[in-house]
Picture 1: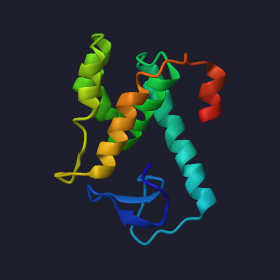
Picture 2: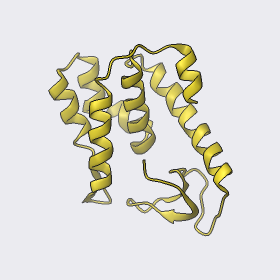
Picture 3: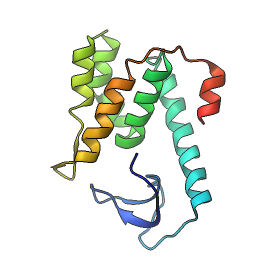
Length: 141
């Protein structure tokens, strides 16, 4: 959702980032190709998707997409400790769950429009209802 950057930059929280949001091992001054950026995204999302699936809270493609997007952006540890996850596990209402997504719009102490848009998408996508199949998960990786 943030777009592609082929040269390392500091994200809103000050973390060195490259490609489509890759942060592991990135140093300022690094440069990559578009193909490498796509491969890093594929690898990163694959890891996050496995972690989200292991939580057994995503029963539709929409839920999986929303939670993978969220965890990719804020980190799997933050998802695991979040009130959002607690609300999902407790069977919270649509309003309660959407409200929890929309609380996560700050980076570096600032409210960011890009995060507001991302959380809006995730909050809505979570309630779209196609069932998850293994073939669809593999295709998304």
